[in-house]
Amino acid sequence: MKKQYLLAPGPTPVPPEVLLAMSRPIIHHRSPDFIPVIQDVRKDLKWLFQTEQEVITVAGSGTAGMEASISNFMSPGDKILAVNGGKFGERWAKIATAFGVTTIEIKVNWGESVNVSEIKAHLDKDPSIRGVYVQASETSTGVAHDVKSIAEITKTRENTILVVDAITALGVTNLPMDLWGIDILITGSQKALMLPPGLACIGVSEKAWKHQSQAKCSRFYLDLKREKDNLLKDTNAWTPAVTLWIGLATSLKMMREEGLENVFARHSKLARATREGVKGFGLEVFAKNAPSDAVTAVLAPEGFDGEALYKNLRKQYGITAAGGQDQLKGKVFRLSHMGYSDTFDIITAISGVEMALYR
Ligand code: PLP
Image (cartoon, rainbow, N blue to C red; front, side, top):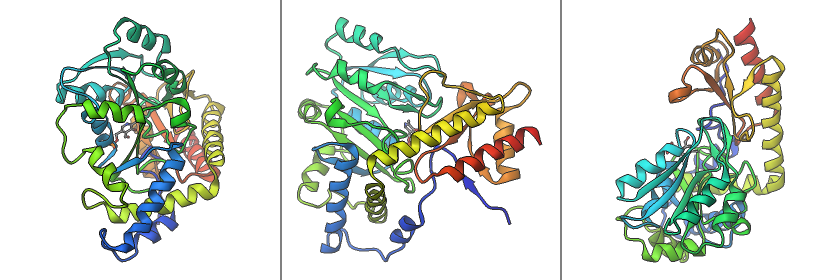
């Protein structure tokens, strides 16, 4: 027998309470049985996103949320500014191109966070830019971009919305949507929401809805306005992923019981423990200045292949971390401290790394 420990940055472990709730017999989504689930999810997502606006949940992975953030708010020929500092930052331009939207990219060295004054310079030079697209936590590098400062730049510009991929940041770190002026805030179920993969949740500001009313990109299934109109009547446009919604209602309830400040404090503590733990035996954290509280990318030491190290962790100790992606393949391994994670998960992970390296 070998016990398994899941410390990859998604899917993350699912609490037993959520698994149990999802094992209930299926219910019909147009019956009165589902209405309390919709009502709880609507209320608690607003709480988590720190917004008065409706948060839209679609069946799909996080990328569905990213795609919807372009197709619902842009028209072909529009220009967006995208921060590209890793595997997920790269994705904005790929999606935009598919919808005939032009991307101006700010390329950021992997491991660094974006220089916010570059965003301001671009918007000052070209006020026709319709959206700034950025990751709050770039999972491939373990970097957190400074969303608060970026929002200060976009907040007063009616023509430009701020779109934040918080797929590995929401429920990890403070991102008060309304207070900061974030226009679109996206997360995915398999991260800090402590659920299996399959849902994307998208918060949309009033300003973004104004953009939506003029946006002409093609959309059908991922038409957020259609789903919003249904949610306001406590129903859904399409058959929702009923079981995942029941899981979501349960995990949101658990987060509410813990309290938002405590959820953030727990993630911050576990992230610091991970960084200090690996530094303790001489390893370097890849993100020097702005590390994410969701995931830590650790540079493999001289003479060690990061990929082999990650495979060894899994084979010998049952610890599933993650390797590096693209240019970081073999150079880093990544440990998650996101979602249903506590002190003992981190102690296990750090001890596992130490044993894999030095035993
Ligand atoms: N953005 C970020 C920051 C991510 O971490 C991920 C997935 O890991 C995605 C986007 C894509 O999400 P998905 O794989 O669920 O489509």
